[in-house]
Image 1 (spheres, rainbow, N blue to C red):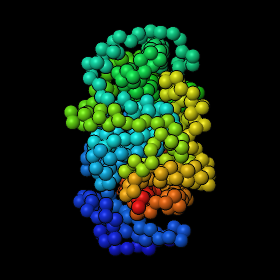
Image 2: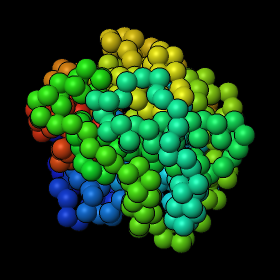
Image 3: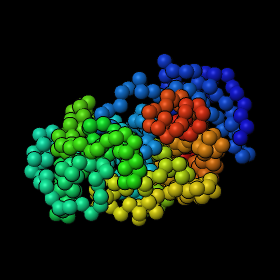
Image 4: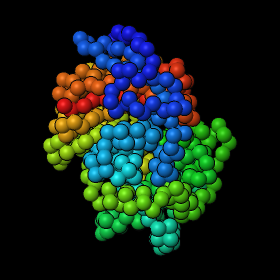
Length: 414
């Protein structure tokens, strides 16, 4: 890929960017980028930042490799109107569609992992805190024994509460599948299973978007000289509920509920989404699995157990390509499907990353995939970003290696 620098500023910016440089941010750097036989524009700057608008507390659900809500908000605000359909084929924790719902858009979400729907759907229907508390008080806190050894993560009394809650939720799902209070409690409990503070059910372990193996947790306990203490699961669930709802405004709650009632939430291969009609999506904002950089199956084994899901079977469905050729083959099918469902004049914002110590820039492979499917490439957009604590835990240093920037390829269907 060859590049040629251009003068910083607004000259040559796509229309959707021209009036939207952040006043406190860096000036936009413009380059011409040659990918294959075609030339495209690359813009680098601070297009959005956490200072522009604090993300709503309803987003505070942990999941590996998720982007911040400011990213989809940037594109949703520029490229859609109220009532338009916003889609994410790799929905993860649901950041794109929850933000779209808050902004009054209609939504479609898809993810091969059913945990995505478990984490997303209840937040379209924010409950009354009193209703959650009443339901929690009605749930037995003693139950049967666990079918797996949880002693390295939980105090025996905590483990008993978790097992009782699991049995209750799985039983209720069979007889009351549309009970959103139960689904809310399941969602919050799923995200409180393990973590590194007293706000989680477990003893100190890795951040809540990762679940270590039992043997690895035993080593952590030995190294730290720790033993699981009792944690009141009901109190933790109620406190997290209050935290998730703390910034939600009445108008936003109405927007979420309206979007949730019309939402399409799929658990499919992103390259085979037959339920989505042709040309109904105005904007897709997504971030696909990046080669084999994140181990979704290993990270989610405990969450799958709690929700009665077959983690091994789910893991086989998730795109975990080890080579660029395998990855581009899978993404080629996704782009063909995106072109089918996108309206004329609609856009795709496809977030990629620098992987394997900057030796692979996936945008160089994504641009041809999109154009071969029929899209035109409007630009490659690079947003400046400060690293998070989680990134440091992965062993990644800013400006050194890993997915250290938001790199988005923007396509348009003419």
